[in-house]
Image 1 (cartoon, rainbow, N blue to C red):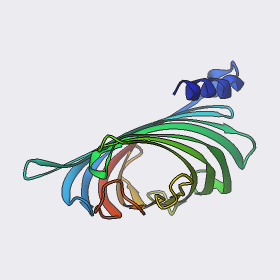
Image 2 (image 1 turned 135 degrees about the vertical axis):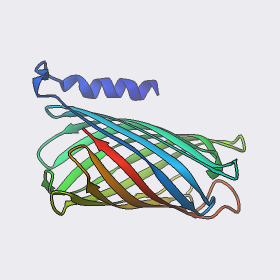
Image 3 (image 1 turned 90 degrees about the vertical axis):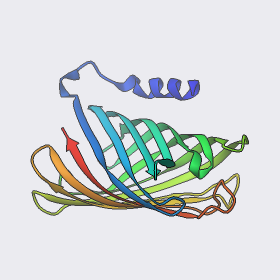
Image 4 (image 1 turned 60 degrees about the vertical axis):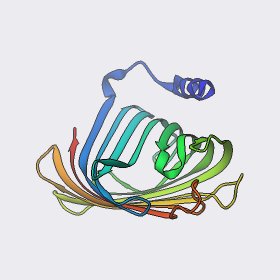
Length: 238
């Protein structure tokens, strides 16, 4: 963690003194979730995304929390926190470093620390209209399992996202993420989400999304490999 913070500071040294051009963005989301897979229930989903950009530098913070109960009994609970720094190299190419901590005891791990370093490339970049980009890089994962076992793993991460604004009110997004594992080759991951958003006013919008998570070798023996999450939520952007 100390090395990550030091690297984040070093990467941010390019920040200039003219703060007038800085830009803040915020997205808060709350909704009802229906899960299928290792657990089936109705639950509450909360997420927060905040970013601060100045010139070619961008800092982002993200957080998420999911809790489900069935007949008053806790059936699923997960949370994550993320801090990320992006540096724009030119109009289409950039670099990033990020640190994430996540927890999902129902999936077999108490804490999972992911440190990412990679590059980002835009295939299409039409702001507020159409965007398509891909990210690729190295990931180091430190995991504390429910069983008490600990592991350090070297991975790669390949991610792509496509966004389309169809008209003034309707937009959609599709993203996919593949995480091969170099330490334990069978423990690779694939995640994907498709979503549709309809604006209610300049700040609020209604969003429906379908998230698919696939673990080729789950941390818990006998657990299902695929989890799916269908969400209908209210989103505030400002």
